[in-house]
Length: 211
Length: 119
Image (tube, rainbow over all chains, first blue to last red):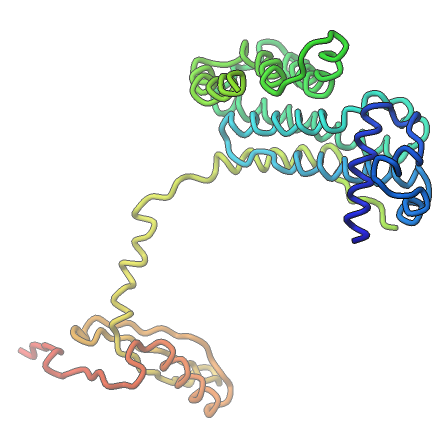
């Protein structure tokens, strides 16, 4: 019962943080959203910092699960699946960007964990590029450092695509997100890579678009 | 509270390279990879006896497998050894009963099957 209440508090907190930003949410709002009293909320979480830590613990668990799904299979579909998971994750926790600097100031241990996960994301993307190149799906690096820049661009697309769509007032949808990521890899695909893309990935994006 | 376990960047990179290389070292198996099952299948139709041999101060347990219709097809395999002969005999009996298809020992080899030509 206590676990169910804690999970409800977690979901309410994420919803409120997304709507209003971390700093603007009060305990009373979280309690009202969850449908419990502030006293009951205090029984589960001593203060707001404890709720924030719990939310970020859940966030890092989910991000860790996405990272641990690296290279389940050697095809493009593995990367596509991971991109889809990243979209769901960053959509669910889109307060992360609103509160990036607030977290940096007030919760240094959370900042460290963010940096660790971000480093892993970066390394995974770079490792994928190397793998696809070895498999003959990607061209040889045209110039030294190009694939490092590509890695950084892919990472930025994944992490900041949703906020830039919101800023432009455009639709946030998974197939636009995937297209934005894949479009950066397309110029570097070999004929074999293009064949794999149009066979495996393009139908998925088309189906998402139709739905 | 213990700090979270974390791999540093160079080590994590090596882990990723290892995961990548799995897809180059593992290949789909060929039919001939399972030939060992067919090659050893005759052992399922074999009569088994145990044999104790004193070697270098310990008693070796050997199992002798002979096909019950073609007894010239046989093999002897050393399983293990014991210092005590009684223990070795007891273990040999257990192993023989475990290995033999015919647990009650009703299968018999016939001398007629051993088609020796003594000329």
